Each structure stands twice: as structure tokens, then as C-alpha cells.
Image (cartoon, rainbow, N blue to C red; front, top):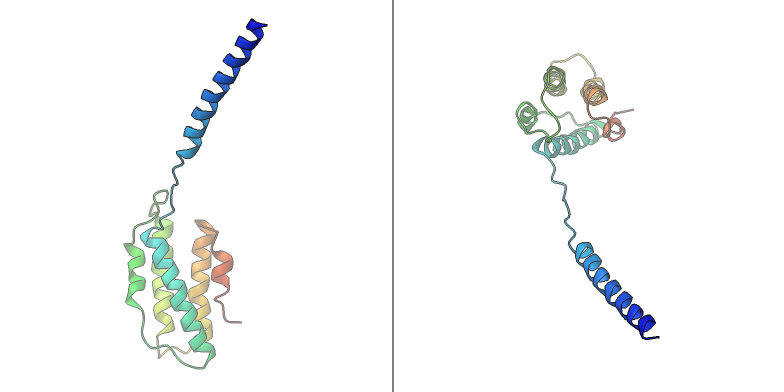
Amino acid sequence: MKQVLLFFCFTVLLSCTSKTKQEETTTKKVYDMYEPSEMAILMNQMYAHNLKIKNEIIAGKIPTEFPTDFLNIHIAELSDFKSRNQNFQSFSTLFVAAEKEIFNSESTIAIEDRFNNAVNVCVSCHQTECTGPIPRIKKLLIQ
């Protein structure tokens, strides 16, 4: 009987120390918080600005000033897992040209078409690299 009681006490003692170690490891959680890259921040700013331009065009206003912050697309820091490649360079150059064309007051192309062309350059680039934002970008198109 003493042996059974001794075994029982020993088992309880071991289980208590095991729980303490488990509790220690579960309370030491480290969270890796997402911090957007300069490029992600810039692209969100470009989206917001283009949404404003879209609404102005729909309201009948013609945008007049090219946002020079868009030129930072060539220098903004990318996410750690991305790199500037020739494909990205080509699309970013096309994007800047298409975006500048929106503000070309001498163009004979309808403002809606010029705007949609710039948005479609964004979609085309994102089809090759980062496909996640495509549905959001397509919402910018003027129907």
C-alpha cells in the first residue's frame, strides 16, 4: 500500500512540474508584426490618389497636376523577398508614362481611356509579380 501511495505522489509531482514547463513555453509568445515596405506604402498612396482622380473624372473635372510622388516607384524600397528586375523596371516606366498622359491637356484620347490605360498597366505588372491586389486595382477602372 505504501508503494502505491508513493507511486501516486511521485506521479502527481512529475505532472505538476511538466505543466509548469508547458506554461512557461506557452507564455513566451513572440509576434512578428507586419511592417509594409516603402513600395507597399507608395502603392497604397497611388491607389488612393488614383481613386480621387477617378472620382474627379466621373464628376467631370479634368485633373491637372501629375503627382511627383509617383516617381518614387523607381527608388522605393521593396519587400525583403522581392527584387527589382527588368520586368519591374519596364512596367514602372510604362506606368509613369501612362500616368503622366492622364494629365496631358493636349491629348486627343478621352480622359477615361487615358486613366483606364494607366490602371491597366498596373494590372499587367501585377499579373507578373504580385497578383493579390489585382481585384482591388480593377475597381479603379472607369466603366
